[in-house]
Amino acid sequence: MVAITSLLAFAAGRRVKWFVLLFWVVVAVLLAPLGSKLTSVEKNDAASFLPGSAESTKVNELLQQFPAGQTVSAVVVYYRESGLTPADTAKATADHDAIVAAKLPLALPPTPVTPAQDGKGILYQGCCKVCAR
Image 1 (tube, one colour):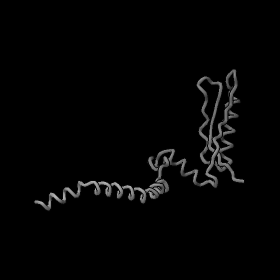
Image 2 (cartoon, one colour; image 1 turned 180 degrees about the vertical axis):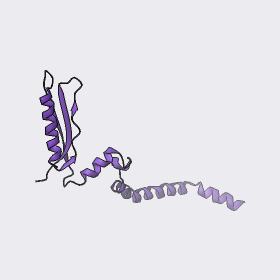
Image 3 (tube, rainbow, N blue to C red; image 1 turned 30 degrees about the vertical axis):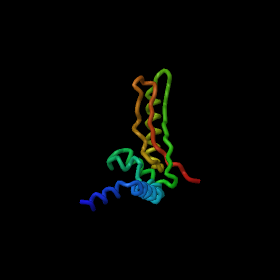
Image 4 (cartoon, rainbow, N blue to C red; image 1 turned 90 degrees about the horizontal axis):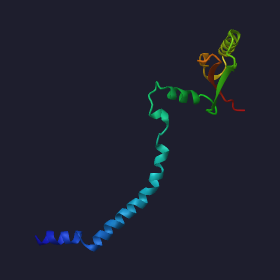
């Protein structure tokens, strides 16, 4: 019983408490440089959290195909204050079809021609590759 009491008194002693504190300070100092390397192995991009069928994931995959990985959004708008005529609509559709037929190196094909609800405008958009020069 005396051995147990003396062991407990030693473990609760002043010197042991300082030794335990010093031990953990040394461990923290030695492991701190490893913590800064953690960010290099993390994967925090949006694609890692999204399913493969998500549009954002598909866009990220398309961006990787380009040298600089950069694209520019293009929006084509036809507008007439008094309202578009059938000739305006035909011109917008013909221009859209010409872009599609040209098979340009687009990141995303142009969207369908979309008329405005008030009949004053039409638009379509696409995503163009930025050429590295």
